[in-house]
Amino acid sequence: MPCRTIAVANQKGGTGKTATTLSLGMALARSGQRVLLVDTDPQGDLTKSLGWHAPDALETTLANHLNAMIEGVILDPREGILSHDEGIDLMPANIELAGMEMPILMAMSREQLVNMWMSPLKADYDFILFDCAPTLGIIPINAFVASDSVLVPVSAEYLPASAMAGLLKTVGRVRRQINPSLEVEGILVTLSDSRNNLAHEVEETIRRQYSSAYRVFDTVIPRAVSAAEAPAAGMSVFSYDGAGKVARAFERLAEEVLDRG
Ligand SMILES: Nc1ncnc2c1ncn2[C@@H]1O[C@H](COP(=O)(O)OP(=O)(O)OP(=O)(O)O)[C@@H](O)[C@H]1O
Ligand SMILES: [Mg+2]
Image (cartoon, rainbow, N blue to C red; front, side):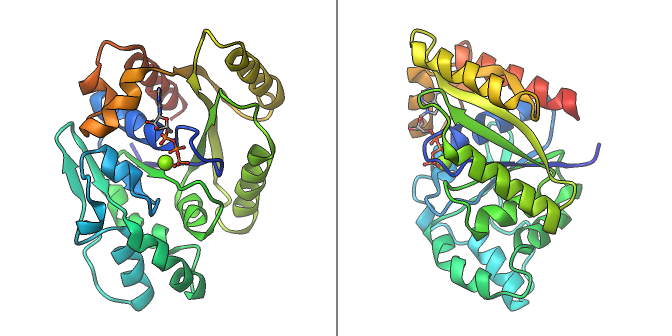
């Protein structure tokens, strides 16, 4: 099976991007897929959520690879990849990535740097998932260029506003100008509290507005205290609360993603 690369993105903050990257990646790994997660957020939330609580102390992160691409320095693309004991790999990120923004913008192939680093790794994995920061800057655009598709988590706690339109426009621009095969993997409703009327309203609005043009996943990710606690323990929801509703939901999401493949 060829490697599938998916960017998890929404420029609105706190929509469950990092949680989705981590838990979808774990669910895919549990079904036998070889998975690499790539933290592309200078906050390093994905890195921290997997138990590397001091990302700034890590020697090699995504920033070093992008710098090596710009400078033409030879660096093994696997250098710095961390193995989590639940069976997935991680290319971490830290605050150094924030300092790379300007050098990336000045680089000759400024939209291609992540793709250039990642391409040789596609032979080693079935899935590569990128956790994007809540921006539409040059680093998420690099992730879109490297990806087959973009998966968009949307919080059930807010009616989707202009953020979605901006994101879908950017995806369209990348498709037209750089990566013609880029697709929208799907829109995923997250952080849903079934006792809350707004959550139902948001889900209905999203299905009504988007399902004719995009896949809206049948799976909705529920809000649960255990899912909010797991990252501090450096564990996935599968280890932290394997019988819980969030773990079940990510298993169903992984099935939907695999069905598409
Ligand atoms: N299913 C869930 N149930 C309860 N809390 C959750 C769930 N998923 C994520 N959270 C919590 O909600 C917050 C936002 O989630 P997350 O960090 O995944 O969003 P994000 O989109 O990556 O945010 P950012 O835009 O800052 O990168 C976090 O505190 C996280 O622990
Ligand atoms: Mg995040």
